[in-house]
Image 1 (cartoon, rainbow, N blue to C red):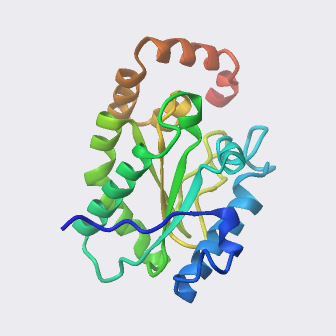
Image 2 (cartoon, rainbow, N blue to C red):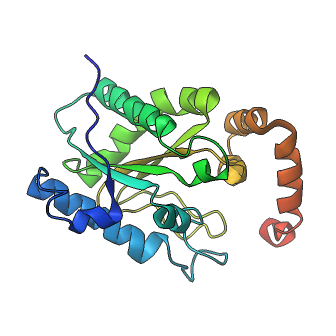
Length: 221
């Protein structure tokens, strides 16, 4: 039986009683906590980020275009294979959502919020899920999954002491891979190869252009 995919919610819809009437109190609380965190942190600049602009440069446009959706899921009593199937369902939902082509497709995001997953279990669950899901999804469809949870030790590209991936409730996002993702793959030769294969000649030009504007000598020192 295929995994059932519930309705997706825009950030603005979380305040609409009619739209959220079927959600349990804990689900609504978790979605609102993540939405508030996105609006208070992710879309704003931060002095420790190491560069100008919002913490995530894509999210402000996604909110403006109304192409950032949230969905609640409960998985505490489920195994890894179920979560993999669940996220594959969201990946397919993402691929079918408009806009499918063009620049606008880069600003689509589905945020799958795991409302009953504790922060201390999130890393183990997400690591196991992404081990099965991340590479084939990127190679076949160009889809990236991102894990967020309290205690996530992932650091900002330009400041190794800043950890922007620590959300109040664990979630995985689903988005289209973009050419600027190479920064996240510098320490992983396999992922850098997947990236280069996906973007081909345009990757070379994009990488060269960006390298000209980065303080690589300062980073080396």
